[in-house]
Length: 345
Ligand code: RAM
Image (tube, rainbow, N blue to C red; front, side, top):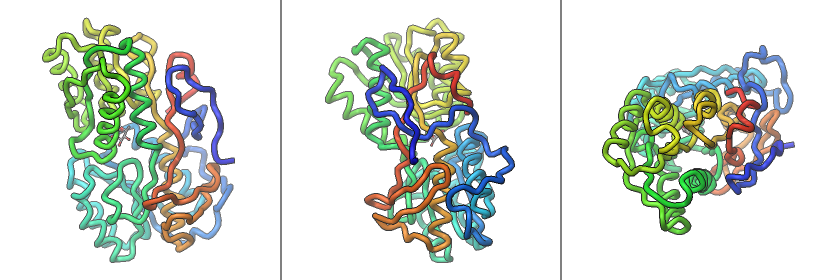
């Protein structure tokens, strides 16, 4: 079975499927299981390149990638820059290509800045899978997407609209200004607001660069600049956690609503103290797991990355490559005080 059904949230009308693990989702199980396509990995070497290191979201996606690599019998290394800046990933891509790795799995800080390096890696024989945040499509073989972008945008708009009572001022606290994934979601959120929430005014979009301190400072600045602010949407796990930390000790706690995309472990205390009512995400471990199966299928020649190609992804089941060489993990999921205790990632 591809996905496990879970109960619907009353807050968001997205059909909630997804392969969200109920407990833990790490790869510290010794990696001995080999269900699904465990055979045939050979001596393949894969490299995982997140936007930056030190982000629990990517720690979790790498856990999932390592779990998949264990099952497939391939090697996997994680490398990455400290900061999520547009071209900070280029040297890591060049090194992976020089090392002759078979597959590169990358979450892009910028849709174009790493394209030349990725193309050179492809020319050197490396299969390129983007996950989480895409490049321009011509720079990669396959993109493993966490969920439909319009669904991710709508989930967040629905949450903030519900929390502020359908009217008022909101701001967006995003990641890096060039991040492909956040920028796509922000455009779709603007459309959703214009079409369905005319009484909500988006007063500003600011960028915390997926850096904890910068995100914290940007939250502080937003509250000073907009004293009437009713809500903040932060479509980044780094941003929402920093904003929650700021709000939790400020006078605005509970008054300025905060939602967006976060991990349960980073936001648990803020759900418990009332700073955050509900937020959304998918399971990053499953995303890393699926991206690794996709990279192995490409690198071993099982698939070309063309629309209609199918491959097995272990415990997640079979996936089909869609239009523009995109593979979709599932649907976003909403976490709140009633269900957060069920999750550990
Ligand atoms: C941060 C990163 C990542 C994004 C999540 C929601 O961890 O920006 O790319 O998908 O937030």
